[in-house]
Image 1: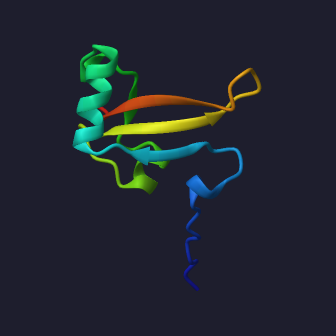
Image 2 (image 1 turned 180 degrees about the vertical axis):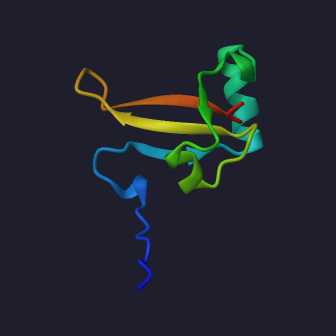
Length: 85
């Protein structure tokens, strides 16, 4: 009897922060606001479970909203999607 593989939505887990893919317009504005280039952003591999769940492709920018226990409620971080070589 063949086993059925269970699909787990990693983004729905309570310990995984909110992830979203920025539009090209949002990416352009982000780079302008921080005066940086795409390659200056921290990287995330395209085969990362969160990137797969989002359907992220090489060249996309992912916004991650993390809860913070300090003065602010949340902290936005960004990752540039790259292929694993």
